[in-house]
Image 1 (cartoon, rainbow, N blue to C red):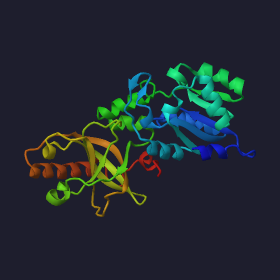
Image 2: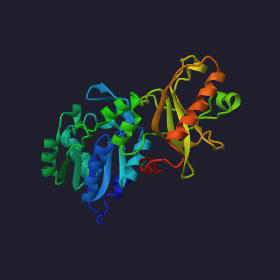
Image 3: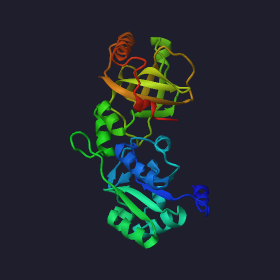
Image 4: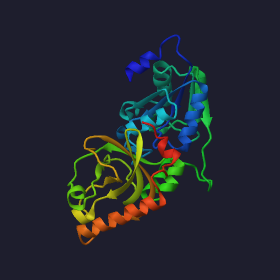
Length: 316
């Protein structure tokens, strides 16, 4: 990060517009802030490393995406640089010190774009009126972007999207995210029951300890392999038939009509539709029969060529 900040000190640098915020999920409201920053110059996103800010305004936060997912999404949306700052190093700065030391001296911003509810500085004690005041004093303009609201006039927010994800309303969450919700994690070795016993191999992916986990159950999904989106089916849960429910939730994805080695690879998986909740079965044979029914259901209402533009737009 220090190297990137140093590069902005080039006398011939373009006009720099900073988009400020947590940007969890990079949802439609965040995308509007980014668009305003892009309209004013090279867009430098200033956000916080997710694992460095476990609380927001005194409340625990379970984040939608980890930092690498945010970086990829923000870059896809046009950001020229992304600075994920450690919250612990900035928590004690008051509003003016943050604007002076980070925005003006290090990033040399000419314009700042923020949402209407943006707060900053020690104890989040400063709002957009303070930001405008400091901007006038330090020599940068402030573009306050109005909220995006859904069809029911509810403000689009990360907290509402987390609620939708955790309650299994994946289609509604995807609409507000502006791209299908994605799991992005390295494939780890599981118990291999899917491949060796059921004949239905799966790619197992863990979630971060502080990450929001979608509602347990089976989803119609797509997995991205070498720039090709492969139809898939994903179970999120604790595998009660195998573990008895005593396990951490993981994502298990079966790539339909595809074979190959995925262990250790970073695999993007998008969730498109919710099929059914997770439940225990009396035997592995019964579990295997249900998974095959789930695959037929998934291919019936979401065929191989049915991937949405929103999912494909989550560029890597």
